[in-house]
View 1 (cartoon, rainbow, N blue to C red):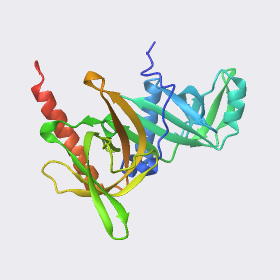
View 2 (view 1 turned 90 degrees about the vertical axis):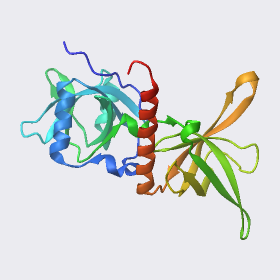
View 3 (view 1 turned 60 degrees about the vertical axis):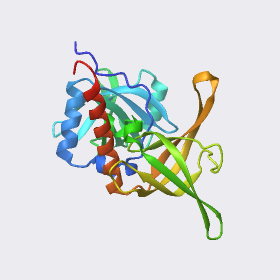
View 4 (view 1 turned 180 degrees about the vertical axis):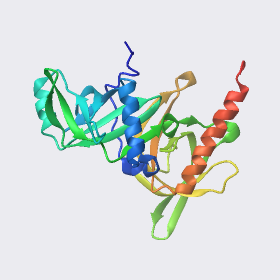
Length: 258
């Protein structure tokens, strides 16, 4: 018996519009990924309505490869609700790669004395390598700098430097300065300068997603903020990715027995 690759019972759903470069639309490639999930008996989480979900797997394909069968839940009431939903959002990991796709108008059909969901193959699929979400700690030797420009009245601006603690394709974590910038969840800073080593600074927009406190040595607490990029230039996103790879390569090169 083949062991399922993973047990994906919980996932944060992602808006594919935020990652347009990682959306697969080629029907042949989508069919290939579906077949891989079938062969590997990959478990998926299927979400519908208000984030209700159940664990499932793709059971097979129609003869012409245009439709799939998705295993149902042991909960009959859950199946009935899912069967009347407009779509199911399926999420899993396949060989360390996150896959997310929607199947439209799932219909409950009998299968070997049980039930399964029948639906057309998805027209698109989000495929994200783990690296796309990987948060790289920023070493002092290859530090990333960030300056937030805040307005203090008509025509008056002030630049507030903040220390960048880590960075990913999605955003940065920063050390909240003791004063000068009002960091609250949802706050947006639309005029920031972010500099990666050996690259010119780029103007980026940041949105505060969360705040948390970290206890340091000697019991001294520090406030940190997780900020996401929005409207990030594609060219700068590429710089972020190359920076993450470079720091990771340098780190691995220093590890013993490699």
